[in-house]
Amino acid sequence: MPEPAELLTTAQAARWLGVSRRTLARYAELGWLVPAVTLPSGHHRWELEELRRQIRELPRQRPADDE
Image (cartoon, rainbow, N blue to C red; front, side, top):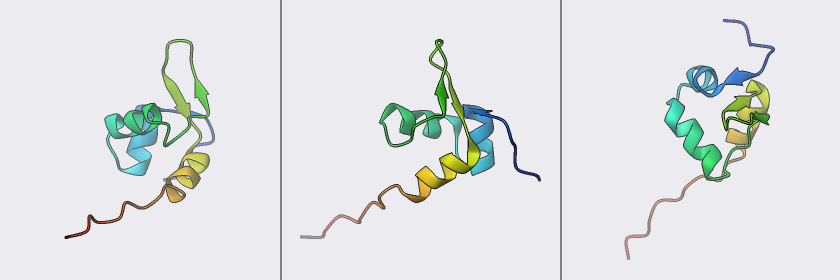
């Protein structure tokens, strides 16, 4: 499947990434991911390669210590 050149909706971006739409929206709400555009309605638009870069740079969660 070719890479999209336009901005994607949250649902489209989530589908490309293989995650749920809610997960992507939640990460944006938490400030972990930054959309390319946030519309006046509050809906986000994403640029796929930039989104992939942001995900690669997310800190990896470390397992809890068994102390």
